[in-house]
Length: 326
Image (tube, rainbow, N blue to C red; front, side, top):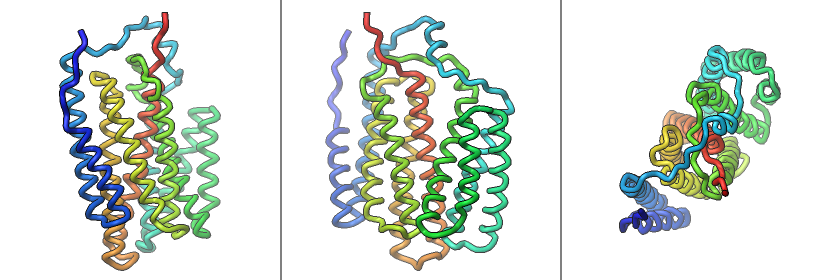
């Protein structure tokens, strides 16, 4: 039985919110802030509307033989120590990213010493992880750590690349921790893919990586903030679209829907922190405590945003497959 969608104000509110957000870029940050609030409200309403619609009609997931599901699942040899090491490495890398943001903000000598100490810990854990993995990806992670150690805090362009590589490395460690977890060991819940979801998830990861690179360039004064702010709006829109499509398609899915919602929440927090950091920089002097706190919070959620989009892309690739034609 076909169910007709109920009328919703969410699309109109979303359009108004995005219009205000973009218009605020050339007028006032207050207009952009109002637009972001409207966009968030529209996203919440949209998720609610999708939930009501899908609760009425049963999900159209096609059952497939377990053998076919297991065959499609990526093969990963995971041991408890491999997963534990990956989790510890991800935590240490996130701490290193935060400390690096503090060093960039000139928070003081203790931050620099802590950054070096945690960096050494990350290097040791990466070596252990590479020896446990014993594949190309593990050696690539180890090579990335060595490159990071050689870059250090040098010219602004090099330092910006150092910061970008650190956040990319964090996303990679989260991916390793995820594919070695118990969640990944379960047989995937295969759902017929919409034609664009796999591609859209990869494009979204690429856009977030580009935005992280722009943010690193802005923090190290390689470029101005204009392009980074514009990119934030584009990336936020892409994340909302991807998250809404996934939640619409996979309402009852055990992993895809929660992962998509988590990604949208983190990204929304990142957008607000980004605007907050921009406002704080205009109100107080550079390298003061409010600027340092705002910068470190913004960098942290930026790394988490990239990691969450990578995890969702992995889940989409694992669980969504093209429809089987008979």
